[in-house]
Structures are given as C-alpha cells and as structure tokens.
Image (cartoon, rainbow, N blue to C red; front, side):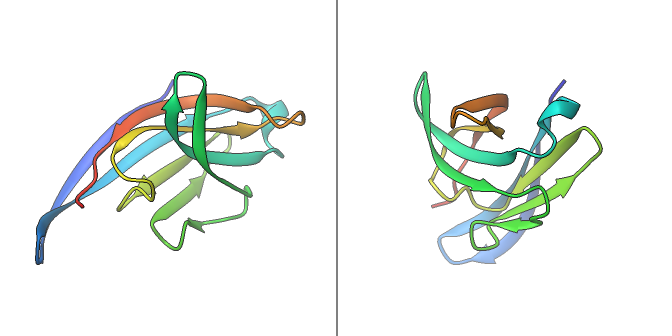
Amino acid sequence: MCFIALFTHLLRTGTCETVYWQTLTCPYKDTHESLQRVWCRQTSPECCTGITFSHTDRSVDGGKLKVTQGSDSFTVVAVEPGYGAGLYWCGMLSRNNTIIRLAEGYFHSCK
C-alpha cells in the first residue's frame, strides 16, 4: 500500500511563496531489498527519466530529495522535483535493468 501526502509551508522566496513538501512511500518485497532505488518522472506510459540511488542514501539529487528507509519500504520527500511538475515513480532497478514500479504520484513544481 502506498500513500501520497502534500504538506504546505509558507516561505517568502521571490516568485514562489509556497513550497510543497511532497511525499511518496514505496513499499517493496524482501527479495528486492538490496536492489538500487529509482526516482523518475514519467515520460510515457511505459517509460520515465530519473536517477538511481542506494538503500543507504539519505539525500539524493543535490539535496532536493530526502530518503527515509523503513524495514519494507522507503519514503521520498521532495522539496522541489528535479525534473519539474509531473507524474513521478518510485521503484527498484531489477537485475535486468528494468524498473519495478512500486508507487507513483503527481508532484507539483513551484517554478
């Protein structure tokens, strides 16, 4: 089961006064625990563009993403999505380099 939460914090930052701390929780099977994590923006129904990271990483994409590792899931908190607004996936990179999509959610951009 996954959930998407949207938290709003008011900040004064010139052109953008609201920052959305957007969260996506990504549950996985025990057999996938050691696989690389994936965070990407959907580019078509079957594809996405993004990054991979390790289960030990806590900050990703130059600090734009914070990752918390649980026993059977990881949670990504995005202060600002690195690829702009859109539908984002979290997942695992399988041994044959295909993405195992765990969850998805629409992330807003302040830009």
